[in-house]
Image (tube, rainbow, N blue to C red; front, side):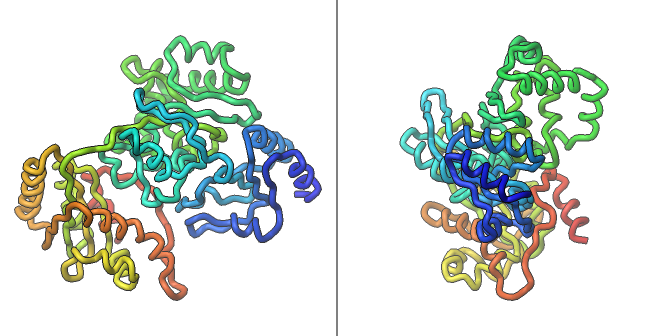
Length: 427
């Protein structure tokens, strides 16, 4: 692209536009193995800046790449267009409604920082990635992030109530739950713009066709897998009203979450909040000499209704031996296990918790799964999660040329199928 066009664009923005090589190289990567030099990096100050960028992109046939924390593991914020970084100016909590349990935020707020704002209300935003101390809400929505506690909180999609977005023609739209009448109204001219009307009308035309719905039902992932990171979640939309009379009210947020910034540019989100869980809690750190054995144990563990079930494999465990900080967090490790499965259990009372732990360990022993079952409580629990979360950074900093390379990212597999899947995958 001619640099004069970028200079002209720069003059129209209240924020920043960088097209020097150093800045472009900074933004040529995320936390993945992918590298691609963008043509420019924009740091918009407000929604008008984003609209200007959309108009410029349309005029010059160039892509916009929304970016927040850059913690993506599969190259989602890497590309040869204009990277648009909203982390600097779009990072505010706009409104908290503790009574109705929701919050409005801008996409550049860090997930853990948001929960610090909510702490005094006894509420939190549930989904938690391993990078939650630096991952931002916009990226979590784009990726449909979940994390170790997805057993109870699900993924970000289930907590996205509304999304204020800028569409491909520069118009604004509010994606939210709609009654059948409201949905039909959007299709028939009551939309905020002609582009929004077209979107609803085309979705209605596609999903009103039973042959399309049957094909979606046949080809999309099993219903027992709630995560959708293998494309757009059209199957979820097809199960909403008006296409399924017993479904939820239609909400394009279900499609927008997980779409990696390809369907609109997020400028504000209304998120569902949940009460901070209270009660007696413990971690059972199951030790195994074999990966497949640990996955078979996980099938048993999830039957006991844990809050989380997270695997720490041989590679992470080896890295933590050489790290000064994480070596101290290995105090619970016995011998040299190939895998540790961390199962978090929460019950109302200590008595109920002890009973649940004993029942789970007893079933594992009967199945001859595992060789050590330490139970951690209180201040020891965060140390284990710190060990787990440190894994990615430690793997990326192994001395020498050999590096861990992401090959398959965010694959979702039914728990019961997982042992066979991994065995075949490893072979």
